[in-house]
Image (cartoon, rainbow, N blue to C red; front, side):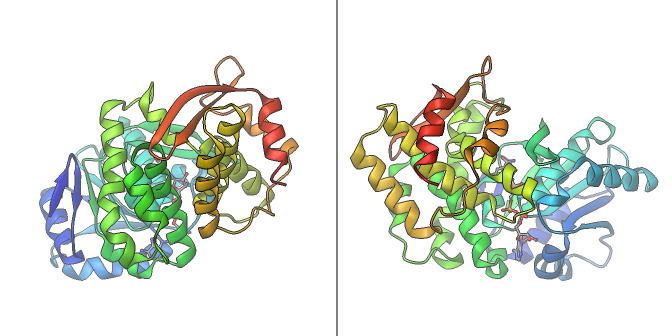
Length: 347
Ligand SMILES: NC(=O)c1ccc[n+]([C@@H]2O[C@H](COP(=O)([O-])OP(=O)(O)OC[C@H]3O[C@@H](n4cnc5c(N)ncnc54)[C@H](O)[C@@H]3O)[C@@H](O)[C@H]2O)c1
C-alpha cells in the first residue's frame, strides 16, 4: 500500500476492508453510495468486512441529478433520525457525485463529522475525491454551493474500475489529460499515445495523476493561486455542462471538459499565449478520444453561465490557459467578445 497525505493507494479490495476496520473502531458508520456502485463495488467490499461490522446504508439514484440540496436535506434528516453525532463516520463510496455530495453533507452536518472517500470511478480516483472540494449544484448551475473540507482518508483501489462503463472511463480520462496539460508533459505524452485507455492501460497513471492534483492542492488549498490551473477547460466546460443539464441532455463531466479544453486552447492561441503548433497538437490529441463537437449549445445559452463563473473578477471572465503541454497560466482576463468569436468557430 502506497500512502500520499491522506491518500492510500490500495491494490485489492480485501485490503480496503482492513483500513475501514481500523478507521471505524468504536464509531457508527454511515455509508453513502448510489445504486450502481452498490451493485458493482460495495457488494464486492462488504464480504471482506467482519460480521460484527455494522453500518447504515444510504443509497441514492446514480447521476448528477442527485447532487442537489434536496437530496442533501434527505440525508441530513436520515442522519438526525438515526441520532448520528460527531463521533460517527461517513464513508462515501462512489464516483464524483457521491464524493462531492457525501463530502458536503459530512462537512456540514452538525458543523462537520469525519468522512472517508472510496472513489470508484476514474474521475473520482484521479480528481473529484482529492483536494477537499465538496459541493452541490443549484438547479442547473454546477457546484454553486460547497465547502472546502478534507476527508480523513481516501482509499484508491483501481480494481473497482473493472466494472466502470467505457463512457465513464473516458470521462475520467479527460481530467487525467488535463493534469498532464497543466503540469506534466511526460504524463500528457504517455496518455495521448495510448491506443485504448482502459482499466488496465490506465492503472499505472492513476497515482501520478492523483499526485499532481494532491501536490497542487497542498500548496494552495483555498484556490487563491496555483490551484486555479486545475480549472483549465472548466470555464467553458462547466458552462456547457450547465446548459445541457438545464435542457435535460445527458453528458458526462469529462465530455464537457474535453470540449472545454479544445475551445480554451483556441482562446489561448487567439490571445497569443500558445502557438499554432501546440494548439494543433493538443486539439488533435484530444479529438482522437472524444466525439466531434457537433452537439455544442449556442453561445447565447452559454453566456449566462459564463457571467456567473466563480473565477470572474468585477464581471470579467478569468481563464486558466495552457501555453504548451505541461505549461499553464491562470487569471487570464478574456472578454466575452473573444470567447464568442472563438466558440462560434466550433458550432
Ligand atoms: N470536487 C472536485 O474537485 C471535482 C473534480 C472533478 C469532478 N467533480 C464532480 O464529479 C462529478 C462527476 O463524477 P463521475 O464522473 O465519477 O460521475 P458519477 O459519480 O455520476 O459516476 C458516473 C457513473 O458511473 C457509475 N459508477 C461509478 N463507479 C462505478 C464502478 N466502479 N462500476 C460501475 N459503475 C460505476 C455511477 O453509478 C454513475 O452512474 C461531477 O459532479 C463533477 O462536478 C468534482
